[in-house]
Image 1 (cartoon, helix red, strand yellow):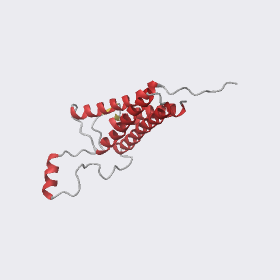
Image 2 (cartoon, rainbow, N blue to C red):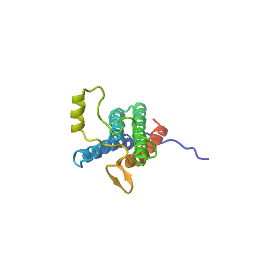
Image 3 (cartoon, helix red, strand yellow):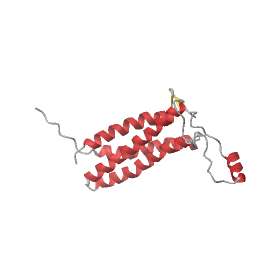
Image 4 (cartoon, rainbow, N blue to C red):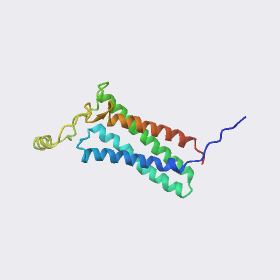
Length: 168
């Protein structure tokens, strides 16, 4: 009878998560600033969990390097959860793009409340309206939100399962 002994926390896993999230943010920012694709509010919401994954992932790397594998495991799990959260927002956004459901109240508008008429007029003239239900770019039928859902979902869930089972 064989007994399954969990593998130790992998340094590659600890390093992979913040690197993946950094790459995802670089792609998003490059498509915005060099590709001319203006993000909608749901696009922006998908970026925040990746930023969080970078921050907690860097803490995990530091803790792992110091030999504090229990704490490093916790922060690796948190990074994986953040990546899964971005994937979940991507799934919601993809559903909005495919008209399966409505977007948030702020979809289609990035204008702030509480502005004077003159401020609102200036904002309307300066700010392009970016709709959440229209994909600015797609490849093979998936938008950037769809790719975030698929790739982040896969990486996040696999990393979450692997990190949760790792022994310290």
